[in-house]
Image 1: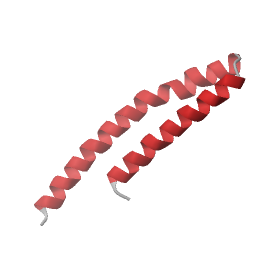
Image 2: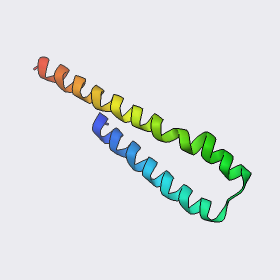
Image 3: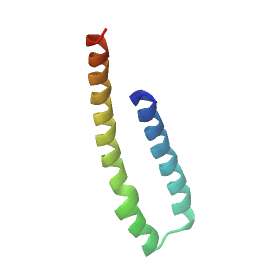
Image 4: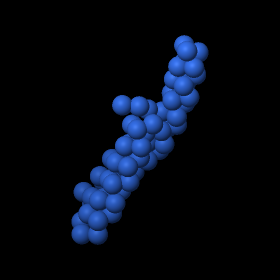
Length: 70
């Protein structure tokens, strides 16, 4: 699987998680759900952005390596 495909899947999965979590929070709104949002869901977005940035850099490096090896 290419880095680009993996990046796309990761972003799609995060979008799906956010949509599903939003639907869940409409019905579940107590201390437990707030704790999950603060400790699990919330920290995912900045980590995801960092991972996507790293994947983009990795993709650029791999493209240069492939070009240099031709």
